[in-house]
Amino acid sequence: MNPKGNHNNQCNHKEHGTFKIGSCKRKKIKQILGVDLDNKPEAQPIDLDKITSPNREQRAHGTNIYYGKASDLLKDAVNQNVTMDERRFQQSGGCVLNFYLAVRVSTIRDAVVIFNAPVGCSSSALGYRELFRGVPEALGRPAEYKLNWMTTNLQQDDVVYGAGEKLRDTIIEAQERYNPKAIFILTSCTTGIIGEDIEGVVDDIQPEIDATIVPVHCEGIRSRLVQTGYDAFWHAVLKYLVKKPEKKQKDLVNVASMLSYTWQDRLEIERLLGKIGLKVNFIPEFATVEQFEKLSEAAVTAPICPTYTDYLSRGLEEKFGVPYFLYPTPTGFENTDGWLREIGKYTGKEEEVEELIKEERAKWEPKLNSIRNEFINISNTRKNGEKLQVLGALGQGRLVSQMPYFDELGLDTPAAMAQDFDELIIDELADIIERNGDFNLMVNTFQAAEQANVTASLKPDLTLTCPFQGGSWKRDTQVTRIHSLRGDPAPESAQSGYSGAVAFGEFLLRAFQNKAYQKTLSEKTKPAYKDWWYEQEDPLYFLDKELDDDYALSK
Image (cartoon, rainbow, N blue to C red; front, side, top):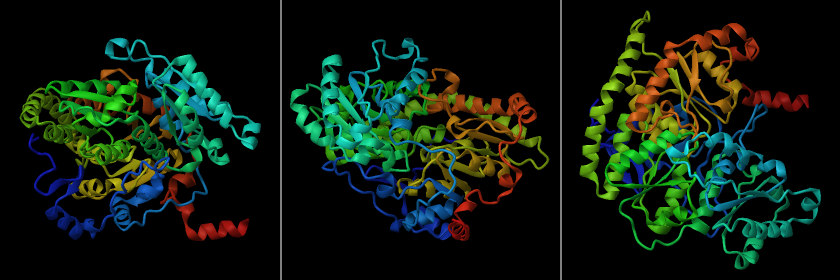
């Protein structure tokens, strides 16, 4: 592997902080795929005069229901033809309030979270214990951390008569009980349905409260894309918390990342950037309110997940002049090289970055090559000698970062799964297709039956899944997890940077070598679904127009 092999070559360049494919590659993509990237839609500006962000469906024509060729979805995205079809069958879904948002906001150290909701909507805040308490204080979990969590406990009368006074009283109680620096108000389906005037209450009570009150409009009913919750949170942070910079810190790098990147990933990023004299402003887990206030002082906002970081990054650039980039992310050697080089450009550390890359590759590349050789040896034992096939990804950020990494490991990726897709990664997806070839793409939010159908159809050698997707069903090939979660402190759970690439490679190799779990699962369990479901060529067959007409007639 060539340390200079970053894909951001003369055919790729940066424009307004985002990855943009250069003219020569754009022509090639147009010839091969019939996609004219010059006609792609432009990103909407961030409007902090609004009470919250647009839904991801509105802002970027997002969807969570698709199965087909990635190239076809790319064409639809460029032509703004991506649709959010109605499902007649759905096993599960995600909540804008609870799924990714609540458990993370509740970790902000000198703040209080108020769930303006029935008490059940606040239950996910308890997940912080399972997600974070396993991290030893020796690895950086704050010793003084406490969960400051309250709920307005909305009842039937509140739905009829309104609950503004109840919210007001809860804010006062939060100030008196905890003396926080910020009070986050998380809205719910109930407050959205009754049209509660949250901003009116906040404007009225704020002069009496020392803490900054931060309303986050994350009603579960407002969007079928849980990614809207990210945007709603960052909109509130930009609108209420981020301050104008007192000074610019050339050595400060903002890093916001998904819950699915582990504590070891955090430590690895701190280690890499620390070696070249840079500080990391990690948000949101265990951040202080001051860290949010000083986001405007950073030299650059660097991504771990482009989907999660997008709204914040754009807002910081538009409102406070903080540059950013969204791609690549530090998954695999090549992408980590590119990620570090982008940071080097904005911090004046280009020479230090090249030395760091050289040093890290000298240490870790032999280990990655050893893993690659193991995979090649396994492939060579097959009759046709074809590469081992792996089915992976989860969010669209992993979609555009995992496939180049699997290629580094000598693995083939015939298909991928993503819980969302939108126009924010058009150039990145085009780049992946041009480099790795076309592939099947399943987009859904935790629909285990659809994943089972695709897995049974493609029969990959290894399927990577997420606990929320119901991954442990009977099948004949190996299965293991896509990722762990932030609170996992185990070194073998890392995926970021050079050491993370090696750790994840070793993890995948063990999944190929140890088949005991899969053998037991196959022998001891029955298929999760009927045979006819596995035999369906299209797992989204129920979206067929004729079937919809038949369904309507039957009613």
